[in-house]
Image (cartoon, rainbow, N blue to C red):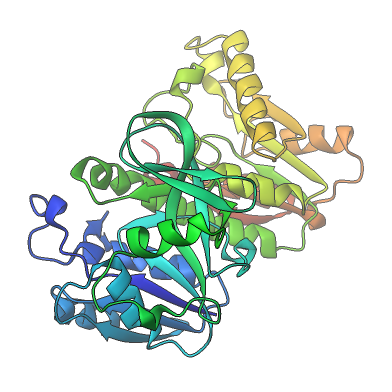
Length: 395
């Protein structure tokens, strides 16, 4: 498979916070945004990537040459701004096959390229959103995109997620002028003739094109990168039972505090999609969690139960599942149920006699989780979120 990344934008809306770099190299937690995109593409069977570049292209060349990638990277160089359509037209001329994915260079969308088919001249990855006005809504009949709307406040709807599957055998883009808008001049007219398909993908989405979302990306992109890396390791395991820590694995950890209410609970980006994928692989998916906040009187057992009930419902609605939750609220380290002691694992074995350590896997983010896995005799996968150093060296 081949992919194009449109990385030639001037980034004028980010100029106040990123003034000396092309937008695609805007640093996110110290890592260029383009690296997040290329790392994500490496999860798929992509053999060739074309970067459509223009503004400060030499900086992009230097960045690419300083790293290695599991696919070939070539360039389509815009000597002048060509618009989205002109950039795609130029880059398609560097591609070798007929089926090509196209990505916007300022958008990260955790869509599944394996389920984005080439069933029309253009197939869009559609993202469901709520309470939005930055993006134009898209009408979709379950198969085809039937209309595109201008930006306006919208309570709920679908947007163009900025990932296209283009079949060049059905789209003769060379007939278009050198400079044009792909959205206005291709997608909108083709949709009037029923030639634009759509597939809904409810993965994590962020567009760093404005300072507010660029600031939000500083935390969220490293988190989803950690989730995807851990998810790949989990799916590659030979285990049939998956044990999960909660805070820092399923939801965002609150440094120096406990998640005491549902309002404080935030799923890590990409976790709901991962749980959906894991549901098809594992016989048992179980949470094992220390919740010392209850033992310390910082929250009630009823509040903890309410958080877990709401969490389970969100996971269920997303297509995932949790088969059991095992919690230790004790304060003392000597309690046999408190991780890293293996008491919670023993309880799970009582409920599910087919569980064995040899066929079990623990996903955690702290030294307690690693020691718990070792004490139970099972393999361990580390969730490498940004606060991992603190979680492994608690005060």
